[in-house]
Length: 113
Length: 115
Image (cartoon, rainbow over all chains, first blue to last red; front, side):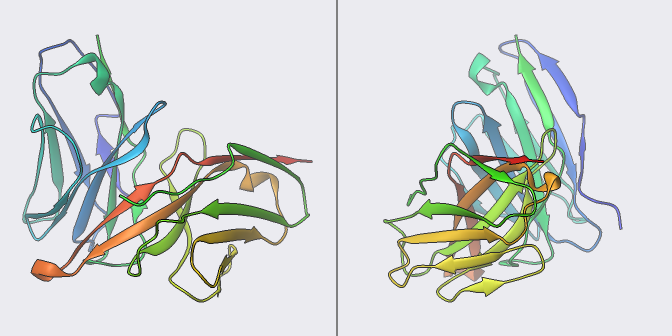
């Protein structure tokens, strides 16, 4: 069974631009969560989606948004990019809501210049 | 959010047991304790989880203090492949509106395994 896939794997943007990152969960998995990983702050929760609905949200500004499609694939969008948004963005899927184990993808490395 | 505290790093020798400590003094009654590990250039990987009782699986054991303010991940025989950053995490469950959750990661602890 294929793992969680994230595209693109690497991305370079400039300040003020917007970016969309994509996540395809493991087949059959219905819950998707997003995390931001930086050297200074570590791993921080962004959002959780299930059945196309945002179930939970972390403490990030409104520039960070996401959505989930009917096939469970998810996208996250960051508008008006800032230098501090440079990070590894990780997507994780789990079989169902409140399932014990999350499976992480390899991440998208975003660099903002 | 409740937080976890871990040492920045630990070293162990191959084929010896290693105990990875974690403090979570502000844990709430419904928070689960999860451990994930992250190898270089990879996303985190689930290791084990528990609520109140000690837990064992094929990868590791988790010992939870009676007051739940600390826990210890035990790798019974460390191998070179166990070298990673280990995260002690509180999994916060929200039952309202059908349920939701979020993982609150600590800073993580780098485990080095010496051959």
